[in-house]
Length: 470
Image 1 (cartoon, rainbow, N blue to C red):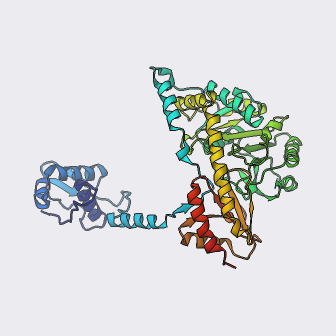
Image 2 (cartoon, one colour):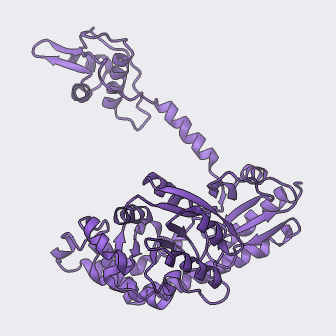
Image 3 (cartoon, one colour):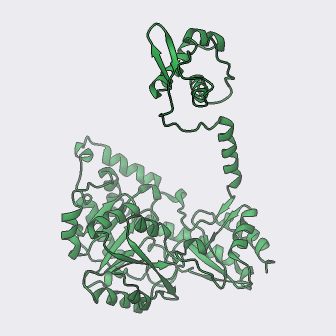
C-alpha cells in the first residue's frame, strides 16, 4: 500500500495528526486494512497528503502505542491483529456537532430548579482576601496530611456556629468533615455497618435514597402527612434507622412541628441501636416565624446523627459537608473509619473557618436570605392569577415552593406545556420512591437561580400556558 486517501479538515479544532490516526484506526477496525497489510511510509504518506512528515509520525506513534500497527525494522509499518483488542467506537465530528446542537435546543430560557444557588452573590472579594492572607506566608504545614476528621479549628468553628444558629451543643471530636453529602453518607455506612433497615420520607431527597440503596442498605419508604413522616408507619416498618429532613422536608417543604419531632425522638429511644439521621441541608433560609432549632438540639439520649453542608449557603463547588456523631458512636468511628483521611484540603478548611470566625459567613447569610426572600415574595405575588386553579405550599422556608393544581390538569401536561415555552419546572412524581397516583398534580418552582425580572417574565408565560388547561 503506497498511499491512503482521506479528506483532512483544516476548518476544525481536531489536529491533523489525530485525523490521520482516526482514519487509519477506523479502517483497521472495520477490516478495510487487513492484518499484516503494509502501510505507506511516513515520507510517502506525508507527500501524498501534503502535510509535514512529523504530523504523520505522530499519528503512527499513537497507532503503535495502542497496538493497531506494528513496526518492523527496515521494513516499515504493518496492520496488527486486533480481534482481541478492546476498542471504542469512533464518533464522527459531524455526530458530535449534531449532539451539541440537539443539547442546545433542549436548554430552557428559564429554569425553576429547586436545587439552585445564586452564585452571583458569592463573596468573591472576601474569598480572595482570605485565600491571599492564608497563603501569604510559606506555611508548609498547610500542604501536609491533616487530621482525618478535619482540622480541629474548623471543627470548633462549626460547633460554635451550630450552637448559636441551630441549638446544637456538640464538641469538635464529634464532628467529621467530608467533601459533599454523598461522601458523608458513605463514611457513615462504614461507621454503622450495612446490616440495617433505613426508613426514608416519601417523597424523598432522591440522591440520598440512591446513595443508601447503592451502599446495600435495605430501605423502606414512609408516607408523609401535613406534619411530615408518619411515626405510626415508622413503627410498623421494622426500620432501625430513619433519614429525615425535619427543618424543611425535601421536596414538600413541610416544617416538622415540635410534637412530631418528640414522637420521632421517642421512637429512637425505645430500642437500643436505633438512630435518626437528620439532614439539615438548608435550614438557614426561613421566611416566617423564628427558626426552629434542629432536632439534634433536643437529643438528650444521643440518638441523632446530624448532617450539615455549606453547599446551599455558600456554593456547591465548595464541597464542604460535615456530620455530628452521637457520643455513643465515637468508639465505632475510631475502630471502623478513623484511618480514612479527610477528603477536604486544609487550605479550604482554613478559608471557611476564617469566613465563619470573622463574621463574613453571618453577613453573607443575611444578604442571601434577604435576596431569596425578595424573590420568594415576587414569585408568590406573580402567581396570584393562578390561585383559582392551584394552591401554594412549602413557601415558608428553603428556596422553592410547590403548586398543587385542582382543575384536573396532569403533572405531565404542566411540565410539557412549560417546556414548550422554554421554561423548566419539576414534577413531584420524580421525587416519589413508590409509584403514586396523586389526586392532584404538583410541580416545584425554585427561585434561587432566577432574578426578579426573570421570575416575572417566566410566571407570565406560565399563566398563559396553564390557566386555560382543564
